[in-house]
Amino acid sequence: MAGLGGLHVCRHLVSATTRWGRLGLTLVFVLAGLLAKAQVSLRLALDADGQTYNVYMRSAVSYSGRSALMSTAQVTLVVPHGLGAERFGVADLTSPIPGMIWRQGDRVDAPAENPERDYLFFSFINNSSPTVLFDIKAGQDILLFRFKRTGPCSTPAQLINNKLDEFRTPNSKGINTGNSVSILGAGGNVYSGNVGELPTVQIRTSADSACGNQPLDLYADLPPATPVVAYKYQWFADDQPISVQLDVPTFSYVFPNQAEGYQARIRVKVTATGTAACDNQLITNTRFVYVKASPNAQLLYTGENCTPLPVTLRAQSVSKASYQWVRDNQAVSTANQQSFTATANGVYSVNVTVNGCTAPSSTVRLMDVSKAERTLVSIGRVPPLVAGQPVKLNPQITNASSFTWSPADELSSAEVADPVATPQTTTSYTLTVRSDLGCMASDTVTLTVVPALFIPGVFTPNNDGVNDTWLIQNIRYHQPCRLQVVNRWGNTVYEASPYQEPWNAAPNGEPVESGLYQYVLTTPYISYSGSIQIIR
Figure 1 (spheres, rainbow, N blue to C red):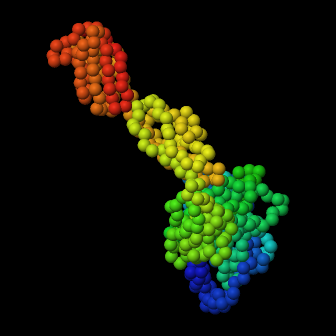
Figure 2 (figure 1 turned 45 degrees about the horizontal axis):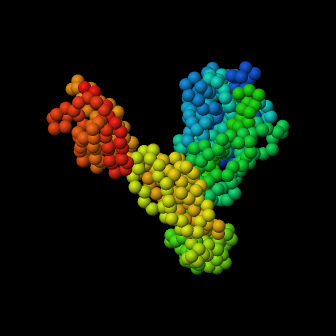
Figure 3 (figure 1 turned 60 degrees about the vertical axis):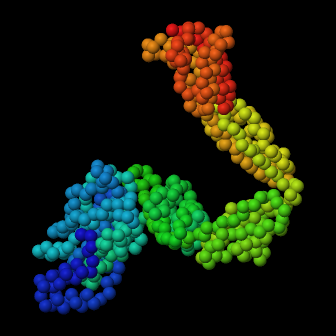
């Protein structure tokens, strides 16, 4: 069972000595005082049927008689993780050794340390009567047990590596996961490792710690293989994938920045593709990297880029920080205070360092120009427009030779100073101008657009409930407005200011005759005129 260890071994030894009598008890305590030497290895082999697994033991030392008694053993297999029909199961668990009974009861599926693998625990306790006893010959493989796999095989099963497996003891489940083999003649656990162990991958980093928002180089180191094996590498941070499968073992990752430092769990999954699914090797490892908080570097400057120099730049205050001012990507000697006076043209920024983590600020480009050389732009205010109504933009510009409007939608040109705009909806336009010296200025204008009117050309005021009034759609957006309707002799038959309610062709309760009438509709934006046909 999972959790076999020294306590179980001692209990079994005491039970055994009770049967042997006082002489046996003396022998047990003598042997228990000896240092058990690691001399027994385990080997896992898959038969040609692709389903039968065999677990062998091989000892470097021969034991016979009572010295060969195996008191307890635990074998842990690491298998592909699966659910339902994809789950790696065990059937027909047997041992060819007379009287030896192995049990597979415990398993841990997808532990936090290695979520792509499941762990199966097989245990043997030599408490039968008579005691299971067989000679152990040095260098000879002894088949301890075999079983058949149920479910598919996507990657090979393997014996756990007590020292390097990600789920090794201690772990998140608080159980003993390792392999162990206790032989009486050796005085305890003599397990030394596994035959044909998969190569181990080690994670190296370009630094012992990382800084938030800054890259750290990650390396996956594997021993050379013969023949040469082509590996695929995928990286994870805090159980989230941060790379696709890569052909190279190196990857650069930028850790998220947090206000306080934190431990990041870095994991690499290495896959070697074999000739069959069960030959696809999967090797993983984990390393923790401390990520220090990077400072918030801000350059505070609200003045113009082209301005008479000198000007004073200032960095936002950060506790326990040091500052380094930079001009044109070169550190300015002795400029390591929170403020700095710029006296020459250039692109300026400040590097802020706290606890070994340096963060650069945004940049500001300064150019020494006289007030007369300053580049200025002012678009001014544009009155509201009706959708689709053209308006020419006439900004006031000083010392500029190139012009860029954004967005370019519904402009006659985005690269002239005074384009014609015909927006269909309310839109904000920004004009950026640049001088021959490289000085820039910008301004933004919002064109407020109201929906267009729809003025019907005919209506039928016959009280049948259909089209009985002259309904001008969207008129509420064009207030205050004035409407005048005249007959063919020029006499006014209807007038309203403001015009808000649909006309029913019956001014003062007296219906007007059928016929063609002329109208003038005056709104705050546009004046409309045309004819309206009344049919009764």
